Image 1: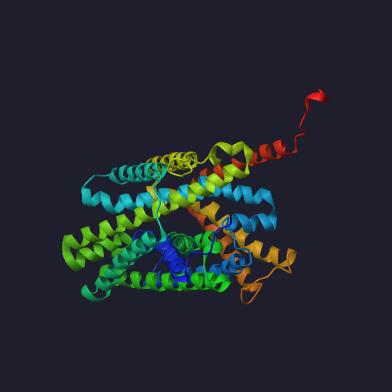
Image 2: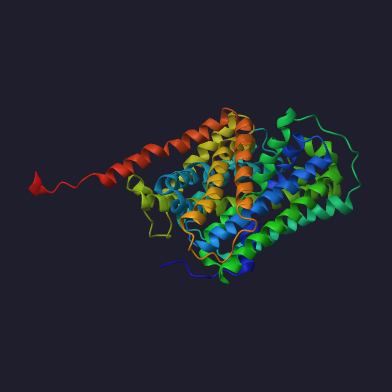
Length: 443
């Protein structure tokens, strides 16, 4: 039975904003500031991030309204390029993109909560492990979260970010302007944009609910555009608040900028309260990512026979238990890798970003391919300024692929290696599908 339209435009916007606001805006401003040379460049890159996301949302609005499907990008890539690229995307989503996102969010959870609990240098990694183990276990037991809970949690996240904006802009005296240390020469803006667009990441997840939004194509298009616009405005205001309260050098020096702003406005209690809000926000996003990621892995197991063990559904609790176990194991391995490599958060960005931007570039190309291969398909929403808009989005994705590889260096090899590990599985699946069946009478 196909999914039924059960989400209003407001529900879809709340889900999209909740996914994007996960916790990145409370962690990445430090890394963006370290790779920019001025306040103007710092704020300008956040505006660029909003513009790139808006262009991407326009492309997704056409794809999701023309081809509404619970498979999201997997469905688009399969129609445009066939089973091979679609399988590699689904494999990468299960083993790199979603698991890396879980590890990134788990480190944000740990970075904000460890100082509150005074857990020491390894406290962040310890808390990241605890979050993954706990939420994976709850989901295996059958934990489910409805849309109303998501709306409430999103409102809590918005309340926390609004408190930081108000405190930074109106309750704290302006900090003296001092420039941070220079970034990495001419590559610094590209590196900074990696973290900016990581913070905007998540808007594309709305593709997976395209078949469940009421109001048809217009409802889905409105959700994408409203969600992207709201997020961009909030991010610009938040970063203005950070800079005003802490100064540019202060932002570049702080891995917990929001807590420092609240500390300046309300003392230790303000910082503690904000840290708890960020931790809850991160847990919320971890849980959402665990739920959607495991179901992608489950679907992969159902579609490809060599991975059939992942396509088993646990009747008690109604959950994809094997997919959850594999996803949790990979995420824990990534947390361990982050703990022994460079800073855990940065190591996870290096692992996920190149693979993520490679497939986003393919999605942009799929819009052009599908316009040519399926010219008679009904397209309730057509991207404006075609083909310039998808070409701009594809170009931005390729630039981000280049920048993330330059940033990650050898760290990118791990994510790419895991992605390519799907090739033998794909070949095995094709071999089994084409192997002739030998009947007893022919022996």
